[in-house]
Image (cartoon, rainbow, N blue to C red; front, side):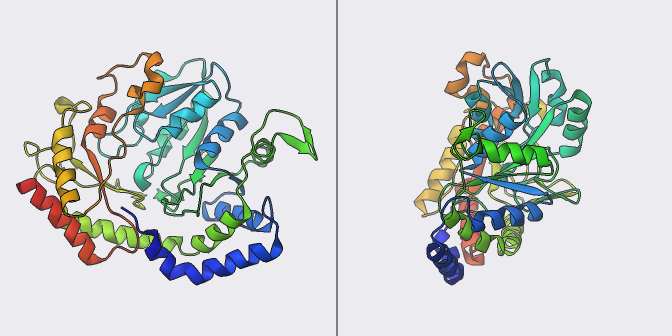
Amino acid sequence: MLDLRAQYAVIGEEIRAALDEVLAEQQFILGPQLAALEQEVARYCGRRFGIGVGSGTDALVLSLRACGVGPSDEVIVPAFSFIATAAAASVLSARPVFADVEPSTFNLDPAQIEARITPKTRAIIPVHLYGLPADMDPILDLATRRGLAVIEDNAQAIGANYKGRKTGSMGQLACLSFYPSKNLGAYGDAGMIVTDSEELAARLRVLRNHGQTGPYVSAEQGWNSRLDEILAAVLRVKLRHLDTWNAARQGHAARYNKLLEGLPGVVTPLVPHGSEHVYHQYTIRLQGPSQTGAHARPQSSALGLAGERGPWRERVQQFLASRGIASTVYYPVPLHLQPIYASLGYKRGDLPMAERAASEVLSLPMYPELSTDQIARVANAVAEALRV
Protein backbone atom coordinates (compact mmCIF):
# COMPACT_ATOMS: atom_id res chain seq x y z
CA MET A 1 0.00 0.00 0.00
CA LEU A 2 2.85 2.38 0.82
CA ASP A 3 6.64 2.41 0.43
CA LEU A 4 8.21 4.97 2.75
CA ARG A 5 11.68 3.66 1.92
CA ALA A 6 11.27 4.90 -1.64
CA GLN A 7 10.43 8.38 -0.32
CA TYR A 8 13.36 8.38 2.08
CA ALA A 9 15.74 7.42 -0.72
CA VAL A 10 14.92 10.77 -2.36
CA ILE A 11 14.90 13.07 0.68
CA GLY A 12 17.21 11.22 3.09
CA GLU A 13 20.05 13.73 2.85
CA GLU A 14 17.72 16.63 3.65
CA ILE A 15 16.21 14.70 6.56
CA ARG A 16 19.57 13.86 8.08
CA ALA A 17 20.69 17.50 7.86
CA ALA A 18 17.50 18.64 9.59
CA LEU A 19 17.92 16.07 12.36
CA ASP A 20 21.55 17.09 12.87
CA GLU A 21 20.36 20.66 13.41
CA VAL A 22 17.96 19.55 16.16
CA LEU A 23 20.56 17.34 17.81
CA ALA A 24 23.10 20.17 17.82
CA GLU A 25 20.51 22.54 19.35
CA GLN A 26 19.46 19.98 22.04
CA GLN A 27 16.01 21.56 22.41
CA PHE A 28 13.35 18.92 21.87
CA ILE A 29 10.00 20.30 23.11
CA LEU A 30 8.26 23.54 22.03
CA GLY A 31 11.36 24.82 20.25
CA PRO A 32 12.20 26.73 17.08
CA GLN A 33 11.48 23.87 14.66
CA LEU A 34 7.89 23.60 15.86
CA ALA A 35 7.39 27.36 15.84
CA ALA A 36 8.58 27.48 12.23
CA LEU A 37 6.50 24.46 11.21
CA GLU A 38 3.36 25.96 12.75
CA GLN A 39 3.82 29.10 10.67
CA GLU A 40 4.60 27.17 7.49
CA VAL A 41 1.67 24.75 7.75
CA ALA A 42 -0.76 27.52 8.68
CA ARG A 43 0.39 29.55 5.68
CA TYR A 44 0.11 26.49 3.42
CA CYS A 45 -3.49 25.93 4.57
CA GLY A 46 -4.39 29.60 4.21
CA ARG A 47 -4.65 30.21 7.97
CA ARG A 48 -3.08 32.62 10.46
CA PHE A 49 -2.17 30.21 13.24
CA GLY A 50 -0.96 26.63 13.66
CA ILE A 51 -0.82 24.68 16.92
CA GLY A 52 1.26 21.51 16.84
CA VAL A 53 -0.06 18.61 18.93
CA GLY A 54 0.70 14.96 19.58
CA SER A 55 -1.61 13.40 16.99
CA GLY A 56 -4.52 14.00 14.66
CA THR A 57 -6.81 12.54 17.30
CA ASP A 58 -5.53 15.00 19.90
CA ALA A 59 -6.16 17.78 17.38
CA LEU A 60 -9.83 16.79 17.21
CA VAL A 61 -10.23 16.43 20.99
CA LEU A 62 -8.54 19.74 21.79
CA SER A 63 -10.48 21.55 19.04
CA LEU A 64 -13.79 20.36 20.45
CA ARG A 65 -12.70 21.36 23.95
CA ALA A 66 -11.61 24.81 22.74
CA CYS A 67 -15.07 25.26 21.22
CA GLY A 68 -16.68 24.53 24.56
CA VAL A 69 -17.85 20.98 23.91
CA GLY A 70 -18.32 18.95 27.06
CA PRO A 71 -20.51 16.37 28.81
CA SER A 72 -24.04 15.91 27.38
CA ASP A 73 -23.27 18.04 24.30
CA GLU A 74 -23.74 16.59 20.81
CA VAL A 75 -21.40 16.64 17.82
CA ILE A 76 -22.58 15.70 14.32
CA VAL A 77 -20.12 13.47 12.44
CA PRO A 78 -20.28 11.35 9.29
CA ALA A 79 -21.03 7.67 9.83
CA PHE A 80 -18.25 6.63 7.44
CA SER A 81 -14.82 7.62 8.74
CA PHE A 82 -12.02 6.48 11.01
CA ILE A 83 -13.10 5.97 14.63
CA ALA A 84 -11.14 9.03 15.85
CA THR A 85 -13.67 11.41 14.28
CA ALA A 86 -16.38 10.21 16.67
CA ALA A 87 -14.16 9.17 19.56
CA ALA A 88 -12.94 12.75 19.96
CA ALA A 89 -16.42 13.68 21.15
CA SER A 90 -16.64 10.60 23.36
CA VAL A 91 -13.39 11.48 25.14
CA LEU A 92 -15.07 14.68 26.32
CA SER A 93 -18.21 12.76 27.39
CA ALA A 94 -20.12 14.34 24.54
CA ARG A 95 -22.34 12.30 22.22
CA PRO A 96 -21.46 11.73 18.56
CA VAL A 97 -24.54 11.98 16.35
CA PHE A 98 -24.07 10.12 13.09
CA ALA A 99 -25.23 11.41 9.71
CA ASP A 100 -25.16 9.56 6.42
CA VAL A 101 -22.74 10.21 3.57
CA GLU A 102 -23.06 11.05 -0.09
CA PRO A 103 -22.96 7.80 -2.06
CA SER A 104 -20.63 9.09 -4.76
CA THR A 105 -18.00 10.81 -2.58
CA PHE A 106 -18.30 9.04 0.82
CA ASN A 107 -18.27 12.48 2.49
CA LEU A 108 -20.83 13.90 4.92
CA ASP A 109 -24.11 14.61 3.11
CA PRO A 110 -25.13 18.21 3.93
CA ALA A 111 -28.79 17.30 3.41
CA GLN A 112 -28.58 14.85 6.31
CA ILE A 113 -27.39 17.32 8.94
CA GLU A 114 -30.24 19.69 9.84
CA ALA A 115 -32.67 17.02 10.96
CA ARG A 116 -30.05 15.84 13.48
CA ILE A 117 -29.54 19.22 15.13
CA THR A 118 -30.97 19.51 18.64
CA PRO A 119 -30.61 22.10 21.42
CA LYS A 120 -27.59 20.05 22.59
CA THR A 121 -25.71 20.24 19.28
CA ARG A 122 -22.49 22.23 19.53
CA ALA A 123 -20.39 21.32 16.49
CA ILE A 124 -20.21 19.61 13.10
CA ILE A 125 -17.11 17.70 11.98
CA PRO A 126 -17.02 17.21 8.20
CA VAL A 127 -14.29 14.81 7.06
CA HIS A 128 -12.37 15.28 3.82
CA LEU A 129 -12.21 11.53 3.30
CA TYR A 130 -9.46 9.84 1.26
CA GLY A 131 -8.18 13.28 0.18
CA LEU A 132 -11.42 14.62 -1.35
CA PRO A 133 -12.99 17.77 0.11
CA ALA A 134 -16.42 17.54 1.67
CA ASP A 135 -19.14 19.80 0.24
CA MET A 136 -18.40 22.65 2.64
CA ASP A 137 -20.55 25.59 1.50
CA PRO A 138 -23.94 24.18 2.58
CA ILE A 139 -22.39 22.87 5.81
CA LEU A 140 -20.92 26.27 6.63
CA ASP A 141 -24.16 28.07 5.74
CA LEU A 142 -26.18 25.75 7.99
CA ALA A 143 -23.69 26.07 10.85
CA THR A 144 -23.79 29.86 10.64
CA ARG A 145 -27.59 29.91 10.72
CA ARG A 146 -27.73 27.56 13.70
CA GLY A 147 -24.77 28.96 15.63
CA LEU A 148 -22.63 25.80 15.45
CA ALA A 149 -18.87 25.38 15.27
CA VAL A 150 -17.42 23.66 12.19
CA ILE A 151 -14.23 21.68 12.76
CA GLU A 152 -12.70 20.24 9.58
CA ASP A 153 -11.21 16.77 9.90
CA ASN A 154 -8.45 17.36 7.37
CA ALA A 155 -6.36 14.38 8.42
CA GLN A 156 -6.31 12.91 4.91
CA ALA A 157 -6.55 15.89 2.58
CA ILE A 158 -3.84 18.48 3.19
CA GLY A 159 -3.30 20.32 -0.09
CA ALA A 160 -6.72 19.57 -1.57
CA ASN A 161 -8.94 22.40 -2.85
CA TYR A 162 -12.66 23.13 -2.65
CA LYS A 163 -13.89 25.86 -4.99
CA GLY A 164 -10.55 27.63 -4.86
CA ARG A 165 -10.07 27.25 -1.09
CA LYS A 166 -7.63 24.91 0.60
CA THR A 167 -9.07 22.23 2.85
CA GLY A 168 -8.42 23.35 6.38
CA SER A 169 -9.16 26.99 5.59
CA MET A 170 -12.94 26.99 6.02
CA GLY A 171 -14.10 25.90 9.47
CA GLN A 172 -13.39 27.77 12.69
CA LEU A 173 -10.74 25.12 13.24
CA ALA A 174 -9.20 22.39 11.12
CA CYS A 175 -7.34 19.30 12.27
CA LEU A 176 -4.38 17.68 10.55
CA SER A 177 -2.78 14.29 11.09
CA PHE A 178 0.88 13.68 10.35
CA TYR A 179 0.69 9.93 10.92
CA PRO A 180 3.51 8.36 8.85
CA SER A 181 1.21 7.09 6.09
CA LYS A 182 -0.39 10.49 5.41
CA ASN A 183 0.45 12.62 2.36
CA LEU A 184 2.49 14.74 4.78
CA GLY A 185 3.66 12.17 7.29
CA ALA A 186 6.04 12.45 10.23
CA TYR A 187 8.37 9.76 11.55
CA GLY A 188 5.94 9.06 14.39
CA ASP A 189 2.56 10.33 15.62
CA ALA A 190 1.90 14.05 15.27
CA GLY A 191 -0.87 16.47 14.41
CA MET A 192 -1.78 20.13 14.11
CA ILE A 193 -4.73 22.49 14.43
CA VAL A 194 -4.99 25.53 12.15
CA THR A 195 -7.27 28.52 12.64
CA ASP A 196 -7.69 32.23 11.96
CA SER A 197 -8.84 32.91 15.53
CA GLU A 198 -6.16 34.40 17.77
CA GLU A 199 -8.34 33.60 20.80
CA LEU A 200 -8.78 29.93 19.90
CA ALA A 201 -5.09 29.59 19.05
CA ALA A 202 -4.10 30.96 22.47
CA ARG A 203 -6.56 28.62 24.21
CA LEU A 204 -5.24 25.62 22.31
CA ARG A 205 -1.64 26.40 23.24
CA VAL A 206 -2.72 26.28 26.88
CA LEU A 207 -4.75 23.09 26.47
CA ARG A 208 -1.92 21.18 24.77
CA ASN A 209 0.49 21.99 27.61
CA HIS A 210 -1.27 20.79 30.79
CA GLY A 211 -3.57 23.82 30.88
CA GLN A 212 -0.66 25.99 32.01
CA THR A 213 -1.04 29.75 31.74
CA GLY A 214 2.39 30.35 33.28
CA PRO A 215 5.33 28.32 34.57
CA TYR A 216 3.83 25.51 36.66
CA VAL A 217 0.47 27.30 36.96
CA SER A 218 -2.51 25.45 35.45
CA ALA A 219 -5.80 27.31 35.06
CA GLU A 220 -7.79 24.34 33.74
CA GLN A 221 -7.53 20.67 32.88
CA GLY A 222 -5.24 20.26 29.90
CA TRP A 223 -3.33 17.59 28.00
CA ASN A 224 0.29 16.68 27.39
CA SER A 225 0.12 16.91 23.60
CA ARG A 226 3.11 18.63 22.03
CA LEU A 227 4.58 17.99 18.61
CA ASP A 228 8.29 17.47 19.29
CA GLU A 229 11.24 19.13 17.56
CA ILE A 230 12.55 16.03 15.76
CA LEU A 231 9.18 15.38 14.13
CA ALA A 232 8.77 19.07 13.34
CA ALA A 233 12.13 19.13 11.58
CA VAL A 234 11.17 16.10 9.47
CA LEU A 235 7.82 17.66 8.57
CA ARG A 236 9.43 20.94 7.54
CA VAL A 237 11.57 19.06 5.02
CA LYS A 238 8.65 17.05 3.72
CA LEU A 239 6.32 20.05 3.45
CA ARG A 240 8.62 21.47 0.77
CA HIS A 241 7.90 18.39 -1.36
CA LEU A 242 4.17 18.06 -0.66
CA ASP A 243 2.82 19.72 -3.80
CA THR A 244 5.07 17.59 -5.99
CA TRP A 245 3.99 14.44 -4.19
CA ASN A 246 0.30 15.34 -4.39
CA ALA A 247 0.65 15.98 -8.12
CA ALA A 248 2.23 12.54 -8.51
CA ARG A 249 -0.70 10.98 -6.65
CA GLN A 250 -3.13 12.75 -8.96
CA GLY A 251 -1.25 11.45 -12.00
CA HIS A 252 -1.35 7.92 -10.61
CA ALA A 253 -5.10 8.21 -9.98
CA ALA A 254 -5.69 9.35 -13.56
CA ARG A 255 -3.76 6.33 -14.79
CA TYR A 256 -5.74 3.99 -12.53
CA ASN A 257 -9.00 5.56 -13.75
CA LYS A 258 -8.08 4.98 -17.37
CA LEU A 259 -7.01 1.39 -16.84
CA LEU A 260 -10.04 0.47 -14.70
CA GLU A 261 -12.61 2.31 -16.82
CA GLY A 262 -15.31 0.03 -18.17
CA LEU A 263 -14.68 -2.88 -15.84
CA PRO A 264 -18.09 -4.26 -14.83
CA GLY A 265 -18.92 -3.71 -11.19
CA VAL A 266 -16.06 -1.26 -10.55
CA VAL A 267 -16.75 2.38 -9.65
CA THR A 268 -13.72 4.66 -9.78
CA PRO A 269 -13.46 7.82 -7.60
CA LEU A 270 -15.73 10.73 -8.48
CA VAL A 271 -14.32 14.24 -8.11
CA PRO A 272 -17.10 16.86 -8.12
CA HIS A 273 -16.66 19.97 -10.25
CA GLY A 274 -14.70 22.60 -8.35
CA SER A 275 -12.90 20.13 -6.10
CA GLU A 276 -9.34 18.83 -6.22
CA HIS A 277 -8.59 15.37 -4.83
CA VAL A 278 -5.12 14.61 -3.42
CA TYR A 279 -5.64 10.82 -3.17
CA HIS A 280 -4.42 9.95 0.27
CA GLN A 281 -6.15 6.75 -0.76
CA TYR A 282 -7.20 5.60 -4.21
CA THR A 283 -10.47 3.89 -3.35
CA ILE A 284 -12.78 2.06 -5.72
CA ARG A 285 -16.20 0.56 -5.12
CA LEU A 286 -16.70 -3.10 -5.94
CA GLN A 287 -20.38 -3.55 -6.62
CA GLY A 288 -20.25 -7.08 -7.99
CA PRO A 289 -20.77 -8.46 -11.49
CA SER A 290 -24.49 -7.65 -11.50
CA GLN A 291 -23.86 -3.91 -11.25
CA THR A 292 -23.31 -1.52 -14.14
CA GLY A 293 -20.18 0.08 -15.58
CA ALA A 294 -17.20 1.78 -14.06
CA HIS A 295 -18.74 5.21 -13.47
CA ALA A 296 -22.19 4.12 -12.44
CA ARG A 297 -23.44 5.94 -9.37
CA PRO A 298 -25.14 4.08 -6.53
CA GLN A 299 -28.88 4.64 -6.39
CA SER A 300 -30.96 4.68 -3.21
CA SER A 301 -33.33 2.13 -4.71
CA ALA A 302 -30.54 -0.47 -4.84
CA LEU A 303 -29.09 -0.27 -1.37
CA GLY A 304 -26.71 -2.90 -0.12
CA LEU A 305 -26.13 -3.09 3.61
CA ALA A 306 -22.86 -3.75 5.40
CA GLY A 307 -21.61 -7.22 4.70
CA GLU A 308 -24.00 -8.15 1.88
CA ARG A 309 -21.36 -7.69 -0.79
CA GLY A 310 -18.43 -8.52 1.46
CA PRO A 311 -17.73 -11.93 -0.13
CA TRP A 312 -17.39 -10.35 -3.58
CA ARG A 313 -14.89 -7.78 -2.33
CA GLU A 314 -13.03 -10.41 -0.34
CA ARG A 315 -12.71 -12.54 -3.45
CA VAL A 316 -11.07 -9.66 -5.34
CA GLN A 317 -8.86 -8.81 -2.38
CA GLN A 318 -7.71 -12.40 -1.98
CA PHE A 319 -6.90 -12.61 -5.68
CA LEU A 320 -4.77 -9.46 -5.44
CA ALA A 321 -2.97 -10.88 -2.41
CA SER A 322 -2.21 -14.07 -4.35
CA ARG A 323 -0.42 -11.85 -6.89
CA GLY A 324 1.59 -10.08 -4.17
CA ILE A 325 -0.54 -6.90 -4.33
CA ALA A 326 -1.73 -5.19 -1.15
CA SER A 327 -5.18 -3.70 -0.72
CA THR A 328 -7.05 -2.39 2.30
CA VAL A 329 -10.64 -1.70 3.34
CA TYR A 330 -11.02 1.80 4.81
CA TYR A 331 -13.42 1.22 6.67
CA PRO A 332 -15.21 -2.14 7.05
CA VAL A 333 -17.60 -1.13 9.87
CA PRO A 334 -19.43 2.22 9.78
CA LEU A 335 -19.17 4.27 12.94
CA HIS A 336 -22.78 3.94 14.04
CA LEU A 337 -22.40 0.13 14.07
CA GLN A 338 -19.12 0.08 15.99
CA PRO A 339 -19.36 -1.94 19.23
CA ILE A 340 -18.26 1.09 21.24
CA TYR A 341 -21.47 2.88 20.22
CA ALA A 342 -23.93 0.01 20.71
CA SER A 343 -25.50 1.89 23.64
CA LEU A 344 -26.57 4.71 21.30
CA GLY A 345 -29.19 2.41 19.77
CA TYR A 346 -28.29 2.56 16.10
CA LYS A 347 -29.15 -0.52 14.05
CA ARG A 348 -28.32 -1.89 10.63
CA GLY A 349 -30.25 0.00 7.97
CA ASP A 350 -30.30 3.34 9.81
CA LEU A 351 -27.61 4.95 7.62
CA PRO A 352 -27.68 2.93 4.41
CA MET A 353 -25.19 4.88 2.31
CA ALA A 354 -22.47 4.55 4.94
CA GLU A 355 -23.29 0.87 5.36
CA ARG A 356 -23.15 0.27 1.65
CA ALA A 357 -19.83 2.07 1.34
CA ALA A 358 -18.40 -0.07 4.15
CA SER A 359 -19.36 -3.20 2.23
CA GLU A 360 -18.00 -2.08 -1.16
CA VAL A 361 -14.87 0.09 -0.81
CA LEU A 362 -11.39 -1.17 -1.58
CA SER A 363 -8.25 0.96 -1.53
CA LEU A 364 -5.42 0.12 -3.92
CA PRO A 365 -1.72 0.97 -3.54
CA MET A 366 -1.15 4.74 -3.73
CA TYR A 367 2.01 6.70 -3.02
CA PRO A 368 4.05 9.20 -5.08
CA GLU A 369 6.86 6.79 -5.99
CA LEU A 370 4.63 4.19 -7.67
CA SER A 371 5.79 3.37 -11.17
CA THR A 372 3.58 3.15 -14.23
CA ASP A 373 4.39 -0.55 -14.43
CA GLN A 374 3.26 -1.10 -10.86
CA ILE A 375 -0.02 0.72 -11.50
CA ALA A 376 -0.62 -1.34 -14.62
CA ARG A 377 0.11 -4.52 -12.69
CA VAL A 378 -2.45 -3.62 -10.02
CA ALA A 379 -5.11 -2.64 -12.56
CA ASN A 380 -4.55 -5.79 -14.61
CA ALA A 381 -4.87 -7.91 -11.49
CA VAL A 382 -8.20 -6.24 -10.62
CA ALA A 383 -9.44 -6.95 -14.14
CA GLU A 384 -8.26 -10.56 -13.94
CA ALA A 385 -9.94 -11.01 -10.56
CA LEU A 386 -13.22 -9.87 -12.06
CA ARG A 387 -12.93 -12.49 -14.80
CA VAL A 388 -12.16 -15.41 -12.52
